[in-house]
Image (cartoon, rainbow, N blue to C red; front, side):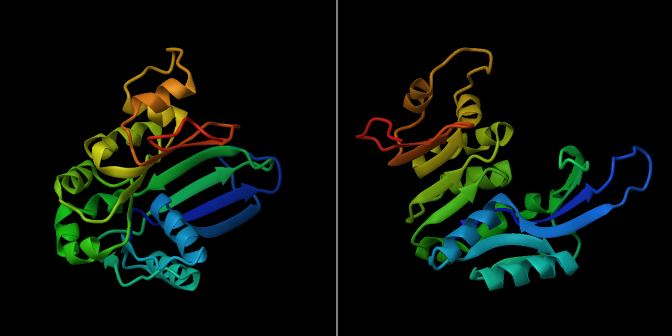
Amino acid sequence: IVIGGANVDLTGTATTKFRDGDSNPGQVKQSAGGVGRNIAENLARLGAHTDMITLTGKDSRGDFLIDHARKAGIQTQDFMQLANFATSTYLALNNSSGELIGSIADMDIINQLTPEILQEKMSLLQAASQLVIEANLPQNTLQWLAEQKLKPPIIADAVSAKKSVRLIPLLNKLTLLKVNISEARAILSIEDSKPVNEQALISGLPNHHRLFVSACHKQLHNQSPDDQSKH
């Protein structure tokens, strides 16, 4: 079971030199996104029976996400549509070279994925073979998960340096944690300006069954408690 966000990505790319404050010819594309949803799709396409607990608006974009998830093989019975909230949407504007000019993230609906909702799903959570969570979830929801006696192993994606600290209450309960260097620094309260090698960061994190630390432009470090870092 994946617990996390699902959003629609809208990308507008100019086909000529971009002119500020004017209407620019270009192409607009819509796709399914969201950290949790992306993980769920990858698991489903790899053949894993994958359910997802997430929220969408009761709107056309929500319908689009549910339909896309079904086609990808994700179980969608726990996609909940809320009438009073818009589906989470990310809008990106690119120049003709594909470089990002600006973006707007309308993702307030994820804050409605509360402990009360998950409490109603407790039997489902306890029956899962694995739980996958991500740091876009509200802080109080992650804290609630940390306080539960959940049977399945828990896997977490730290998402970003800013949001990674939300996972701190759960660190000792995780079977697997996926972070990058910036996220590991944030969790350990190490300033970006302070020199530190990657192995020191890995060693500073709790002794999970398995830890993945990715570094920009480098290979993924895969470490288990009894192993040294492996590429």
